[in-house]
Length: 395
Image (tube, rainbow, N blue to C red):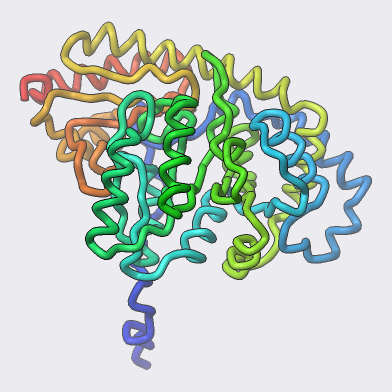
């Protein structure tokens, strides 16, 4: 019989995805995996045992849509302590990673043609989801202190003049992905004031905030807002493991009610039990251990860039997170060279992948979280060697 053809039935916005198994170069600086040696495997195993002995029989029930209440209470306590946010357990929805929370909000707010603002370079997964739901993604100029307030005001004015409706500003203000900077307190206040005066919500993605190994914390944008205009997303992927797929959304009731309609149900209860039991007893000790390991790797990457790239490039010096942003001279085509570099043994993501306008072909995001410090050093040396023998430094 002739095989059934589905082509005429697909929704127009359903993209084709041919993602197979993850490809990894010998030296992989492309994907932001965490340090496997700091995954709390023994602690999680003990936590699972304790939690299942206490509540395992409840796995017979489907979880509530908002997620396991004790874990939401732990998140509320952590946000009050670490981010100066006055939230209750009822303000929080647990999600399958922070990506699901962001996608729920994109679907809740976006009609085709609506404008969503982002930083000059933005996490490519979020940008992909914005475009999937028909948004026009417009970037705002940044410097090493974060979003430039005058640029934000000018962008909002330009969109209004063009008859465009801006639904929200998406920002990663702490250890921004991919640029690595942390927005200053003054900038956070200015960005919030501009958005409040323009009637534009702020979607604050704070998924990297726990990964600070240098400098002082800067309070959340949400803590500066008393109007309910800031929507907040966080993640446990960076302090536990991405494979646990656990994030959360903090939003006013009207937003939670709409966003929940784009959620299939509660998060994995087994994972929630394990995470809550482990974090309730060992969270800050584990975060400290993880950050000590990350600092060593960050330092190894910065030292290797200084040794092998010298004055032929510039790069960021993040106080936390997982990324160093490399900038080569104008005209250098790191975008066109990315696949060849991968084939020769070093993976990176070029800057154009993160730009709504396709800028940044001479830039690259380098992730230092997963490899050992020794591998980081060797990989940066090999990247310089690849650039040298292919004439990249001369372009």
